[in-house]
Image (cartoon, rainbow, N blue to C red):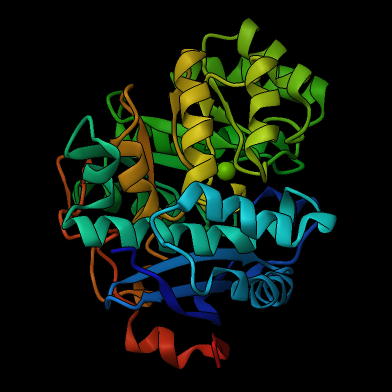
Length: 373
Ligand SMILES: [Mg+2]
């Protein structure tokens, strides 16, 4: 007997951050420090009593737009078989096709898509990683949240050491500020503080032009970095490809792309050694899996962007040893915590994503709609 989607609920929730966050985009004057994250939650229930939880997010503007689009397209799911995820992705996409197959519209779909995969895995009694088919039960992880540019250098060193002490495997430092000498100083200080054995990555958040990226990548070769992330504009595939070809340090990019098609283009240009897809940003797990298949075929390494609570499962299912990004920011939204040990994040074994919305998340919810109402 076919199960049916009986209810869909979308919520707009604003997660406050403990401190205003600055990366290179703030230091070059393009953005204001970030103080909150807009979360779009989708909860799907079926006639047989199964349920799934999914989410998308936006940093700075975009949250109300994602929520508005989700509200408009949610009704097309009611009465459908929740197992037909790929078909339902298409149905959601066509419902809003005139506003495109990337960007904000796709991210609204992402919340439903993640909820449908969560539901399917829960019904199978499997973690999402196991449902997809995993290669490992833990994934090496690195910390990003301690390495932002608003953090003074002494605090940066202390944050990095504290992350390593709690079992996190690597440290990412933000760079890309207008004065490149300060970037070099920070990276050198942390490298000296941690020693040569600790994996360190840097992230310029798209703020270098081609000549600056060329110079900085050459200087950074001496620090034996795991990768240099977003040295150039996210859509400068030729520029990234030239850096990837030229330098020993791997180039990482892909987090800003908002569809599988954009990732296919990036991969075709060989613009990354490490691909960094973000499942909510590309429209959910369904398009993420297409991106991962292309990346594997192209021989790329994988390091999904942000949202470790979701990406731990997707990284576990990638054939080549990936990295997961450790950010504690989303933790207050959920009742569960991910275990970290010996440089690695353990893949949760609870059914589905293994996540329950916390009371705090309910408290931070500003708007909510249910269908049927
Ligand atoms: Mg980044």
